Length: 386
Image (cartoon, rainbow, N blue to C red; front, side, top):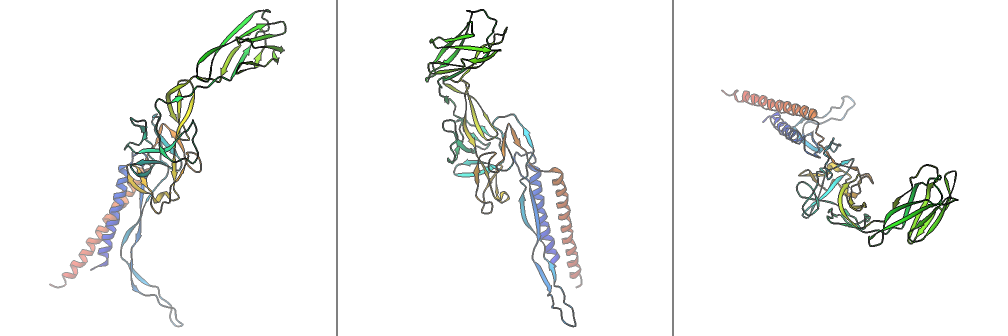
């Protein structure tokens, strides 16, 4: 039988594989986090028709003569180039800007994905669209413990931010220097004890001949003196466990803006809302104004990401040639940063894929024509006996 007949068959098979890969790329043009694949061909065995010969004194050497036996698929390679960003506005949607994969777990299997279309289930666990658990670290006392094992990320609905006792307060603004001696200005601020119980701290500012006296409702007193409107004495006042900072107070004329601008205590609070930051942190906001890190999303990288095996659902499995997963935090140690409220779209280039479609189609047609041509040659051979 003719060798060209089998070469044509191998060419048709290889170009059919190229058509299959190209068709899959086009089908997934709008799949979140999808990475396009490409087909690489190589020739198969070549039959030696004539050996090479050694050059002699009176004759030159000759090269070997070989006839190729067709083509085969050498590799189907995944292109991990960055896809375009699409803003969704959903806070649980995450996009990796750079290298890395999200780590997910379903049953006993750990998989990796670039699809960051996450959501919280009925138990407050961060999951993928197919229900796999997104892996990361849970915070302890508002901090991530380095080196702790990965686990499911859970939104602690009903979490409580502990109360903080007031230890410092700051007074800012201006005390009018043209106020009559003996006049008073009273300012109140709410402060808290260690259990979160609220109390009112009252400061009374009394104009004196030399400046202003500041008195707390507990009886603590200090005198403020000014030179050309700038404070020159009495910048601190202690009221029990609370240290009051008065160093920013000024004493210019015709301006009364004195106020207790802040204090560092708060009552206990419950979780009110959450957000995901660029380093993968799940940050909770409590109704007492406090914020705390609740958890952090983990990322994984591989020495050879093209060695990963596609497992469906936009997920990948490690193989012996991908290397082991290296776990780290987003934005550190070569990991990409996270973008909240956005998704990474497919990196399929439609213009390139349609070009590949034409190339594969013409290659298939050419190999099919080679088979019909070989068949005609065989027909001529059979017609020799008539």
